[in-house]
Image (cartoon, rainbow over all chains, first blue to last red; front, side):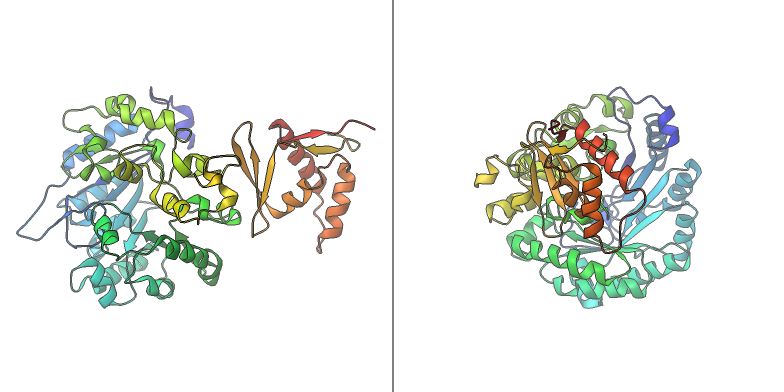
Length: 374
Length: 95
C-alpha cells in the first residue's frame, strides 16, 4: 500500500479502487482470432465507439477519491483512440501509474514520446511468433508483424523496455522459445505467455481444436518453469494457475494475479463492468459512467460485493479444494462466470486438469472431495 | 523460546513435500496453507519434541556445505515463534 493510501480512509465497501482498466476502443485495427473481447474491426471508413475524453477525465477524478493509483489502457487497441495523445498527457498530469496493452502497430515515435513521459510506465506488446507468417496468421492483418516489431524498437529506443506477450495456441506453440530469443535480441523486459481463454473467439478456437489440450498446456508449463525460464536473463511468465507453479517460483518469482478486489473496467461505450468481460457478459456490466457515480458503483454494486464477501471461501469444485486458493482467488472470476454463470465456478484450466487426473495431488486439501476424485 | 525447549510439530498439520524440495504446510483446522523453503523443511522435520534449538542448529550446520549464517539462531527463533503463533508448532513437555 502506498504511503498516500495509508493516510486515506478506505471507501465504504472497505476496498480501495487501485486500478481502472480502460477498454478505450470497441474497435481494433487487427483481427486476432483468439481475442476474448472480440472487438469490431476498425478501418478509416468503419469507426467504432471509444471512451469519450471528457468522460475519461471525469472517471479518473472520481477514481482518485476512491484510492485510484493506476490506469491500464487496453482495448480493442488503445493506441487507435482518436485522442490517445491527450489521454497519455492527462494520465501523466495525474501522476497515476500507467500500464498499456497494445498490439504495437501504433507505437510510433510520437506516441512513444508521450508514453515515456509517464514515469514507470509499463507497456506490453503482443507478438505471437518470431516471424510474420505465424504472427499474422494469428492477428489477421498483413504487415502487422513488422509494425509491431517497429513499435517494440521505438519503445526500447525511448528507454522503455516492453513486455512481449505471446498467446499460445496449436499453430504457434513451437515458436515459444524463438519468441524469447527475439525478445532478448530486441532488449525487451520480459515475455509473458498467455493461454487462449475459452471465451468469445478463443472459445471458437477451442471447439475447432486450434488450442492446446490441457495435458499439452501443463507439460508446457513444466518446460517453461524448469527449462525455458532458467535459460534466459529475461523474466518469463506463463499464465497458468498458481496450483501448477513450483513453490520455489511462487515465493521468489511473482507471475502476477488479477487484482480482482481493486479493479473495475470501463468499456469503449462508457459502461462500467468487472473488466472487458462486460463486452460479452451483460450480467457483469454495472452501469454507465455518464449517469452512474463511480463511488456508488464501487461501493454498492451487488456483484462486486458478492465477490468481496465470497472470494476465496465460496470457490467451488477443485478451486474450493485447492491449497492455493487464497493466493490464486480462482485465477479469473470473469472467465469462471462466463463458463459457469457462477462467480465462484472453478477455473477451466484447473477443472479440466482435475477431470483428466492431472491436477497436482499435493495441492489438494487433504480429506476433500476433490482428493478422492470427486 | 529458550534453548531448553523442544519444539514439536502439531500432529494434525500436514506437510507435503514437492519435487523442488519446498513443501506445503497445511493446517486442516484453519484451512490455511503455507509454503516452506528447503531449509525450513529440514528444520521442521526436527520439530519432533526431541531436539533443542542448539541441536537443530548443529544438525543444520552439518547438513550445509557452506555453513550457516551468524543470524541463524535468531532466524530459527523467529521461525518457531511464527509457527507457534499459528498453532502449527508447540513445545514438548520437559522430561
